[in-house]
Image (tube, rainbow, N blue to C red; front, side, top):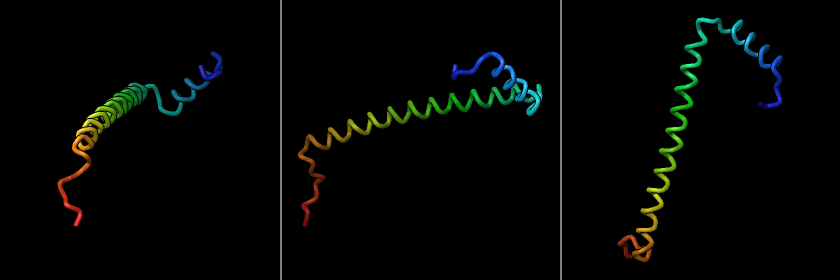
Length: 72
């Protein structure tokens, strides 16, 4: 796991507890979890929007790429 041993992880956990306090840790964890959840949702929505947008592109190309304008 990132080349960290048990001692390093323990020191990081102790530093986080000292910096933020034991009462704030659940709030921080909850906020981090919500952020990850929203990020995953946004990236999956973006992928769906791209595939939806691509289907419109293929529909446009099927009519010869003309948009009904004469080009004058």
